[in-house]
Image (cartoon, rainbow, N blue to C red; front, side, top):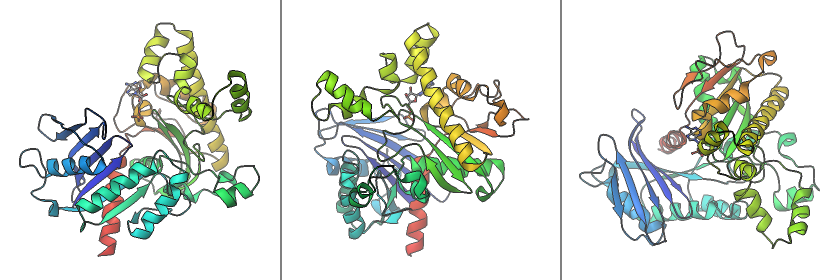
Length: 400
Ligand code: AMP
């Protein structure tokens, strides 16, 4: 069966078509500037030059219509007609406490996602728009929702309850949810496969280090803790997000700088992280280059970032009473050799030994710990789209 995977942002949309008989990628693409002047669709099919379509796209429905036409185009396409697309898997950011796994999308699921809009005001509305647009254009094709939060729903209450008045949890659902769940799940399962052991026998720490970053503790195949919280702002230092800070800083800076309502949120999400510390860039490649050239704040940004990752690795080792494998994934985790080196330095007493030669690799599935390291260190490129397509196939097949 061919599965279309859709990941809708507010003004962009990513898609892939996968042949699930052999889990191969047939084509992928990106639509940018939806609803803004200069809309563009960039489509890549195996063995062909990149296809670029510049045409006005007023809304998500318009964009998806162009995606579907490209998918069935005689030259650029990968299917003769839409009938060949057996199902659509949608990435959805927030399902609150409602879903702990992927689900077939029905009207009651849509109602539940609408209810979660308050919890993810920037992400859920475009996700919902994308689903609605696909439903209109492909009314007979089953659709599945795959949620970023779902994998973390197994966390015990001591991991997800904040120590604030309990009514905020019961009245407003203020608790830790966690994000990047599809990625953590994919790399944890892959780590177990690479180690040749059932995931139920392993303790794994997965480090998803990208522009957004989070760490998860996965004990016997179940997520027991993760570093992102009520929103993706909590936890690690990120490209532009602060991660954990003393909440008193919010009111203090707001007073000092006389900031308007909402500005602190913007500062913590968009102007902090390694960008905030370095004053240069949120891109770790720029930070690395500046650090090598002697820029002290870029060096500091690298150290603060690494410090926080090590902090969570240590915490999760304590929480799980040890660890068998640490996985690095996402843009920085997969590509930043120097950062992996700083993170893993001087952890040998904990049984964690990085092999400096094996670590000289980017974007490739491989073991990067020394042969005598008690804890395996693995580099596993994430593949959220494949995970979404797998869940979609499983659910659609289960419905038949
Ligand atoms: P992601 O959010 O997973 O797409 O990751 C994006 C981040 O990965 C950006 O901050 C990039 O700078 C970083 N990244 C990508 N390639 C490299 C590289 N070769 N070295 C360091 N960081 C990289």
